[in-house]
Image (tube, rainbow over all chains, first blue to last red; front, side, top):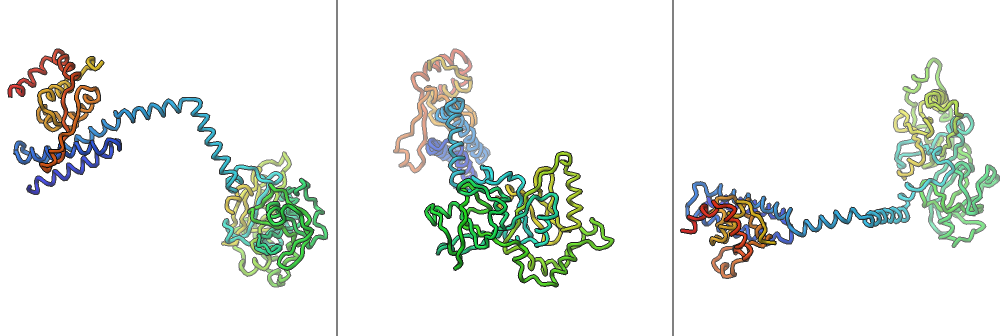
Length: 387
Length: 102
C-alpha cells in the first residue's frame, strides 16, 4: 500500500478513536469495532478498486461521520435518558430536598465539631462584646514578624486614650509544667477581665482578682482535664518554680490558640524592662513628641529614627501583642469623621506616626508607614484566622 | 405498535436498501449516496425501533485477516413497515429499482 493510501487511513482512524470518547463507555468498544471494520473495508474498496478520484478525502469524510453517530449514541441511549429522567424527578421531590439539607447540616456539624478553625469561624468568640476587641502587634500581619509594643504606648492607651477602654498584654512560650510540656501564656493582670473570661464555676474575674499575686497561674480547662483529671491542684511546678493555681478557666474560653495550658499572671510592662538603657529612653521620648514647627501631616511623613535600635529594648515581651478594648462612643459623636479627626490628632501628638483608630463600630486596621516596624491592629475576630 | 412507525423518506430509503441485500454500513452509503453521518444514526434508530437487526459477521471473517463487520438485516416488523412506506413514498420503488434489477 502506498503512502498516499496510508495517511488518510491513519487520519480516519484517529478521528474514529476521538469520536469514540463521545460514545457512552458501555457501548464504546462495540461502536469502535464496527467503525474500524467499516473503515478497513472502505479503505480497501476505495483504493483497490480505484472507483474514486479522491479516495483519501472520501475516507476522511467517512470517518468524520463517526462524530455524528457518536453524538447520536450519547444523546439517545436509553440508559442516559433514563438516568437523567430519574435524577430530574428525584431532585423535584420533597424527600430529596430534605435529604440534601440533612447531608449539608451533617457536614457542617461534623466539620465544626472536629475542626477548631471551622468551629471558631462559626461560633461566637467567648469574650464579652468581641467586636470591640482587637489585637495589636508591632511588625507585620504575620505572626512570625510580630513583636512587642513599646511600653509608652501601652501606658498611654491605658491612661490617656479616649478610645481604648483597656489594654492588656500577653505573650506565650513553651514551658514544662509538672513534667509535661505545654504552652504557657504570660498575661497582664487585667487580661481576663478585659476579655470577660469566666472561670469553671462561671465566675467573672474582677479588677482585684490578681492583687498580690506574683506567683499565680490560671489553668485552661482542657489542660486541667488532661493533666489533672479535672482535680484542681493547689500548686504546680513550672520550669522548677512553684506557682499557686487560683482558677480554672471555663471550657469555652480560648485566646489565639487552644494549645495554651497555663496562664501565668505577669507583671506590668514597664517593670519587665529591667535592661532599659537611658540612651534608648531619650531617643524614645524624642520620637514620641512632635518637634517645633512640624505639623501633624509633616510628622506623619517623617520616618522613625533608627527604629531597630530602640524598639526592641522597650517591648513588652517576646512575641507579645496587645489586646485592646475599644470604648463605646456617645451617640451624638457617633460619626466616623469626628472620631477619626480626634484620634488622628491624639495619635499624631502621642504615638506618631503609627495609627490605631476607630472607624464606625469596629477597630479597623491600619499599618503605619514606618518601614517594617509598623503597628498592626485588627478586630480580633478577623485576626483569628492567621494563627 | 411497531407497524405504526412513520419513517422519513431517507430512513425508508435506507430500510429499502437493507431489504435489497445491502447489509453493511459502508455498502448502504455507497448504494444510497448518503454520508456516513446520516446513514449510521438512521441505522441506530431503525435498530432501536426493531425494524432491523444488527449482528456481527461470523468469526470466520477474522481468518481473512480483516476486522469483523457488523451487518444489518430486516426484521418482520421492518418488512411490514417497508410495505407501508412504499405506499407512502411511491418514488422509493423507482429509486432502488435499478439496484434490484442488477
